[in-house]
Length: 258
Image (cartoon, rainbow, N blue to C red; front, side, top):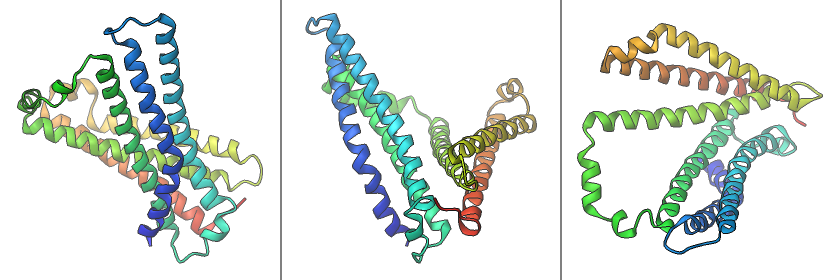
């Protein structure tokens, strides 16, 4: 059933985000052309292009956050919740559906940001298509990577994905707790989120005490680095699991719909 929920949820977010991604990429080409030195352009053109790019970039970030909040609130805590709660789907599946779909679009946003930077470089002339597809360049890049570097990169990517999922769940948990009050729901949700961030800071401080201070970590070599990564993984997973439990508890036991 989770797969069916995802087949509906992912396109629902995409219908609003994909047009923004397209506008972002178009603005990237425009900005790259404006800052390129191949043809002289008026200074006002460069300023306007940079302004458009900045506005579109901000719109993508803000809209992504708004949609993550809106889809969860409307589907599970708002009017749609009356319908979704009678479906043969557990609260765990509902929460997992929202988290996975949001995480997928976070990854797509990161890919779009990378493409945006690449298009700026290409359209400005800082990078040519010949250089981009040059086997020699990629061979040099791969030559500089050893197994240790690849392993650390993979660890950082996995940790980044887990951290993104944890942050999404923190937003969901704050919204769910905020809906336990009958008035000033948004104020209660913001207060809950601030409380979560304070708790995360405390957990991070405790984790640093356990793993030792940063200076000693840097001096103790690869083992200390791996120890730090292991503690980062553990704290991220534990916090994410706590937020997931809070969402599941309040939705499953104490759901308060608008």
